[in-house]
Length: 109
Image (cartoon, rainbow, N blue to C red):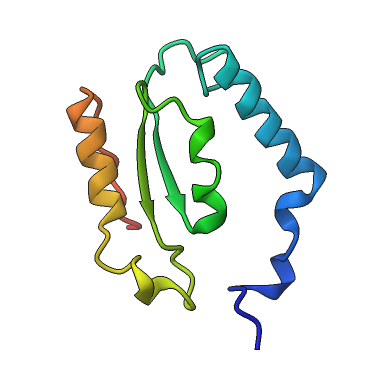
């Protein structure tokens, strides 16, 4: 039995479109920003890193400028290993409000 949450997505992060996104983030990081060039109003980002693959990218984020929230991936195979109870959406809103931004309405209705 595989431990991947979805074997069909194995290797997806190595595909060109994902690599281009990662390169964009690295380029922006080297300039001191991690957001699109045209968005000059955004000076603070809350990054939510779910799972080991995402957490490996943590070093690419300027933590003196942005907030990082980490937990297990919410997939069925790992949700019980740290995702449930981690309150990621509440933590995002708390970080946004602490930085003087509006909270996000996460409701689906």
